[in-house]
Structures are given as C-alpha cells and as structure tokens.
Length: 168
Ligand code: PNS
Image (cartoon, rainbow, N blue to C red; front, side):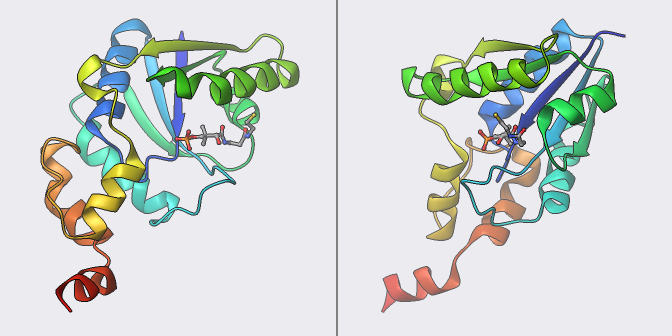
C-alpha cells in the first residue's frame, strides 16, 4: 500500500494542517498523521491529547489514521511501511528548516522522500504558535482551527494568568 506520513507537533491542529492532510489523503492510499516531538518546542498539551484532537477532526477521512510518534521520524516511517513524508510549505521562511530536515532524513533513510504541498494562500499566515498566543489571551480562534475543536482549544489553551493580568 502507498502510505504517506504527515508529521508535526500539531499544538494544536489548525485549518492549515487540515488542508494538507485532506490533500494528502487524495494522493495516497493511506495517510498516517504522526504527532511527534520537536525538541525545539515545549508543547502545551501531551502528544496523546493532541492526537485525540486530531482524531476528532479527521474521522471523516476513511484513509487517515492518527498515531503518536516516539523517536525519529525515519524509524516511525519504517515501522509504518512508509517511504513518503508529506509536509506543508508556507512562505519561504519554512524552507530552510524543512530543507535541512528532508536532507537529514534522507541521510538516515536513503529511500525516504519528502514531498511538499504548498499551503493554500489563505493559510500562509497561520501557525499553531499564533493560535496558542491568541487562545492564551482568550481571543477568538474561529476559522483558525477546525470548528469541532474550537471550544476545546479555546478552553485548553487559555492562559488564565495572562487574561487576569490583562484585566488587572
Ligand atoms: O510541526 P513541527 O514542529 O514543524 O514538526 C516537526 C516534527 C515533529 C515533524 C519534527 O521535529 C520531527 O520529525 N520530529 C521527530 C524526531 C526526528 O526525526 N528528528 C529529526 C528531524 S531531522
């Protein structure tokens, strides 16, 4: 089976991620959304919690599953029988880090290919970190995260201290 991995931190999943997952699911027989650890980031929610949110919003795609990924992406891909990883690319600022990861991953697993899907123009400004910042101040995340998890993201990511400070 032609399996692709869509990896990320997904802290939280955004409508931009959803678009890349949907478009990947039209190209590959099966897509595994892999919730991984980026050592440069400290996620707000555990990998299991992030995976649960993704399951809620990807249930309608019959060929998409969600897994927590521990360790290296290349090892996870081998375990899943996948030779393709799909990543979304936004503006040029994404390129450098993605290029480095793609080259390193191919050094570790030479048969491995990274395929880039260009983000839709309307999502080019969107990131999980922007969603976290907006939610932490009690701001509106409608249209930035899938509708089904809007309320829960609002609740889980709100930083009560920040809101209290703003009021004070
Ligand atoms: O959403 P992010 O933070 O850009 O996702 C990055 C992620 C999780 C895909 C990346 O950090 C990753 O692949 N982590 C697994 C560990 C690994 O393989 N690191 C080596 C990458 S060269």
